Length: 269
Image 1: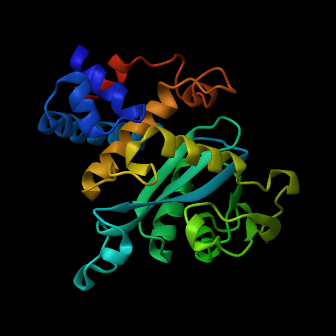
Image 2 (image 1 turned 180 degrees about the vertical axis):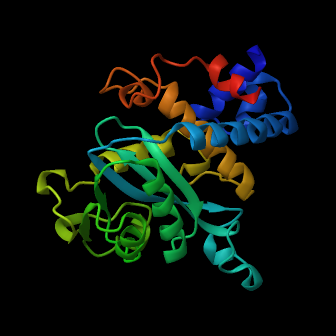
């Protein structure tokens, strides 16, 4: 158990698999097997537990990463295949409790948007307000998933022209935002994606697979998904949110205490 705790603690705090091998002395195949087994257990636990939520405001975002290689290096026969090149993690966050309601690993397509929103709709039981970015597939996906029982708005950001070649890794400068009403009667004060974008920073800082300009990127789509499952259950149930002073799961009424790593790993039983 001590070795398992050391491995999981390293992975959810931003260490790569190879770094975890060096720090813990556990072999790479053993770490990947633990990641796979625990990832499956965490995904199943989240699926049956994080339901019946009553969020006032939900924020959605997509996080870019890549699997195996950058999109420009994907062979022609593998173009458009999930697991090679671009990969997007769709996330839905409760603005108030900060609980990660659901996520989906896929491409940035209308089909992925539909699957993501259908799963989100099954986990909430009241007419929540939903805010997304300006991706064009969202309105139809939300209309199909929620029907008329949703207040929905988009926050469309406007950016300046891209940076010069010598600064191509710098983020584009945001020049303004437009709040766009889509359905229902959204509260203008709640039209925001700031909280879910802050959670995106947490994802990038605490999972080596998402860190930019590193060779710790995911090599296989399965391991990518398992790592996300472990991290999000850890984030919801084990990690004390600095603003809330409790875990998101406690704030959402899903747990009455802060989980220790023993409990997280105990999901394997």
